[in-house]
Length: 345
Image (cartoon, rainbow, N blue to C red):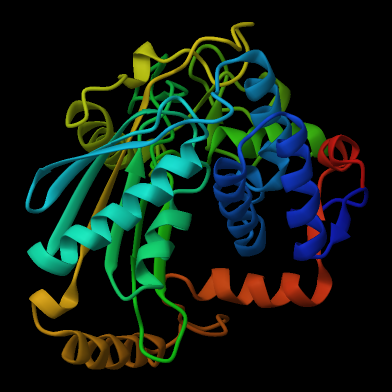
């Protein structure tokens, strides 16, 4: 995020301020801690659209009644390697982090832990939950479907949500391997961020009401799927993968049936979002030590691959994020003007 009117703040300052605002909105300590953790993750790795700027939205939903202030999570073990978590219509971050914990517990015995989540809400950046599993030594996948805002390939109306797919794996003596990608060209929150900053969007990633590409964020009515004009069918199909796991397997809400996250005026009706987490224990496959050795070898080979003219280096998934974390630890986290005003910074 680059703009002359952004301000930078340290992670501890933002963490304290975000937690205070959520607390003032009535969120329980357990749920606000999860939301703050997930938002700070996004802000530190450079996913500003899902970072601390969402604090105001969550506070509005807590005050309006869409989100329960003190949700009581329920866990139902369905089989040796599967479970469901009921988020009780609270902050989605709380239910998602709990699902990772449940998945780890199952995977320690069964080798895998597949956990569906129902009666939840927006969870922010899916990578936060994949990372949470990887940091404890488990290969982890996390996904969610969201309300319709992305056109199908060659489509002229909203159908899928931005529907992220996130994967993470532990790496010995190093930061985890991390992939967190939207199946749309960009997240809708990125459009809102550009509106706040008064910045143009790149070409070919968003469309107007007729499905035609635009760069003015104020004209955007929908996003385009990952892959662009020629290969957008790939992104549209991957969005369906997120819906399959998050909505169909959990019996929750389809993309086209969601109450919109923004607009519409309804801030009191729960959205019954579904998410899905899959946790895999390397010990129950090749073995944790061998897996770690192979990850180290694989990443060394990847990063040592030939570099095309004009490029500095080849990066593995997560390298860009860890570089950004180091940069923001040193320089502070950039925060847009609207969020600065809401947080009172």
